[in-house]
Amino acid sequence: MLDVDLHCHSNLSDGVLDPAVLAARAHAHGVRLWALTDHDELGGIPAARAAALEAGMRYVCGVEISISWAGETVHILGLQIDPQNQLLRQGLAHTRHGRLARAEEMAALLAQAGVPDALAGARRYASNPQLLGRTHFARYIVERGLCAKVSEVFQKYLTEGKPGYVPHRWASMEQALQWIHAAGGQAVVAHPGRYKYSTLAEAEMLQCFKDMGGAGIEVVTGSHSVEQYAHYANMAQHYGFLASAGSDFHAPGESRVDLGQLPAMPPGVKPIWHDW
Ligand code: AMP
Ligand code: MN
Ligand code: MN
Ligand code: MN
Image (tube, rainbow, N blue to C red):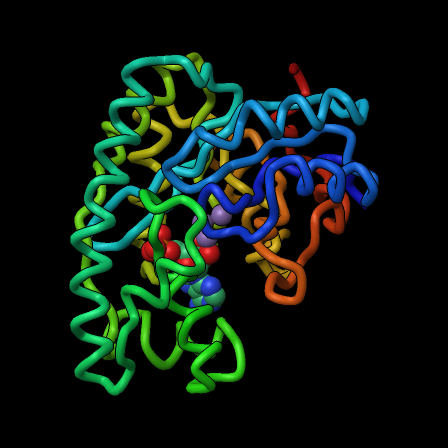
């Protein structure tokens, strides 16, 4: 088991646990080098860091930024960022701002699809009103008994082509990398195996990311299959990317992989934490 976990979510974004509770869970599961990476939000960092250091873990400041690339949403992790950096903070504030209008549109579409009161319902699941996202809607739809679990809601309602899906224009890759680099951080493509790109488009995306100074890609993540660990280890070698690892844990009973439950990195890649 890997004692590193550089990707997870608190209730400051679409996780359900407080940052300090998450830190304790990470430590209890054997994590010794840990990052909280909430979506588009840095607010959980002080509590996460304090609890991590208290427990004796090494802490890395992180964030997961939503971007649009060739019509798809891609997630870029910023690791080792300075959370006080103004350019990063402004960029994330702008990103969060667009979420409210999107949530209102989602609620209107869901009402037409037979899910009433979704905005108020999703809000009850969002501890951070600025970070209303699809997962909060999904938990509400499960609560109403329309689906058995969150992943089923995504399949039935919240992904492209489904009745509650609202296309959204996030920041560009260039902007996100500028923010991360201004904050002294390293940029990492989160769960590259999850995007719906063709092989060619994926190669273009990774090359573009490399050309813009991207440092790494996630190889071992809760979103990848074992075959994808090997595939993205090869991709890391091919492009000269450092390899990152993180569970992408959101909630007990909801996430496939819990904190600290990742296998070792495949051989032949350089872990992003090698020189930290
Ligand atoms: P948003 O940023 O509001 O578009 O929500 C994105 C989040 O939705 C991701 O970070 C995941 O937590 C969750 N998500 C996306 N696709 C799925 C899926 N197929 N099953 C479960 N959760 C998903
Ligand atoms: Mn999420
Ligand atoms: Mn993600
Ligand atoms: Mn994530």
